[in-house]
Image (tube, rainbow, N blue to C red; front, side, top):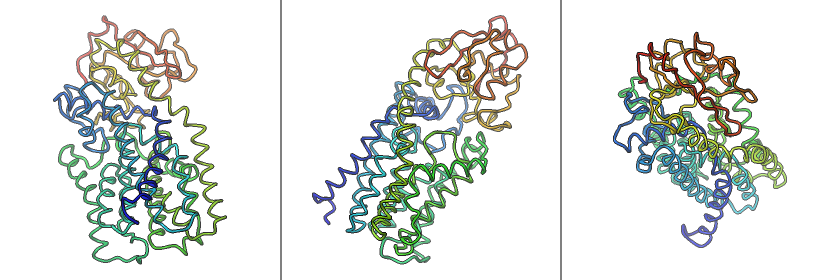
Amino acid sequence: MPVFGPRALGISALGAALALVPALFLFGFTVDDALLPARYATHIARGLGYRWNVHGPITDAVTPLGFPYLLAPFAAGGPLDALAAAKVLGLLVWTAAAAMLAVTIDRASLARARWAALVMLPASAPLAAWSVAGLETGFATALVSIGVCLVAIGRPRAGVVPLGLAAALRPELLPFVLVVAITPPPGEPMRLGRAEGFRVAFAAAPFFFVVAIRLAVFGRPTPLAVLAKPSDPWLGAKYALACFLLTGPLALVAPRALLRSTSFVRGLVLAVAVHFAAVAVAGGDWMPLSRLVVPVLPVVILAAAHLGSVADARVTAARVALALAGELFVMIKIGPVAARVGAARTALVRELGPVLEGARVVASLDAGWVGAATEASIVDLAGLTDPAIAALPGGHTTKRIAPAMLDARGVDTLVLLLAPGARVETPWTASIFDRGVEARIARFPDMAASFVVTAESRVPGLPYLVLRRRTDAAGDVTGEAP
């Protein structure tokens, strides 16, 4: 088949459309963490360096090291502009990768059943949402998809390049990438020789290059997120199981077809299984829509297409239908809500940004949108941008902040989230707050006398309070946020 023949162009257009339509539907999706690299990118664009706070140190808050530099050319107007650019770039690279995925499925065999797996592409809310979330997930997904497609068309050495880059962006992908690196193209037997060793080394090199940079610059091999969010394998196992049931891998549960299939397909299925195990060990993720497994979902679709080529058509239809049921459940139940997240975050920035004018140091658990709303220094109560807080006991929503820390950091403003359905009480410290660290701060001595409520968000479902330190209570404040 000609690489750019009419059929290939038509199939690639189909794949692109199947990825583009749901991504546009979910284009409003994002998460607060997407505004972290956006703030870094803004400071880079303004010549301030790789910093979270303008006058603070260089910190390792972004898991894909260097990702803010990709956004910096678009970030002069502020974090929201950087986020918008990240969303568009993620959409473009994923759409291109989906086009290549469709062509690769077309070349998998002549069996019509191979096309059943492609139905899983537009039904996947995680694939669509995370391609436009503004984080690196869309880029990692595109790189994995392109790399595996290159292996599928007989170019495994070329395939390890994008695969290695994906592992550099998302560290938990490394075991998956190493398995794919030794997986032979279709029609070739599995072997472990010099060529496979070369591919493994080449695939792992970007990951260890990033580790070396982190050690040299920050003194630790892992990003702050690893320290701020301690892993819990039990929670990770539940997370991985839920992802397995709802994101499409049920289509790969085909023992007989696997036995009849090629080493290439068995290698892909093994790689997917290894990745789910790695995600479980990593402790899963708090973000919605199965973020940590999204990069391997195109591989699930490709492997399912190959299995459909050798399995009974009725069994293939049943497996794909079962996988599709989980995907559609997520798309229908969570998709519409997810699509409104970005608009709500933007509304928060616009509503409370003016309220935060004049603040010098703001403490908040949701540092992303707060950092987009003000140029003030931000004390990140989750520790994602702050090594000292990251090292404290507790999870990222339950850090054991000491009362003296607020004074030592010079905090003059707090942004806290009320629990769903809660209201502001008198005194405000009697209010019910949503997360552990916020409730902890409200219990600090003399907080009601030191801070006063100056604003409450009117954005539905996001009842944030802005509290300012009383002028007559500022005498003991000695420090400034790093």
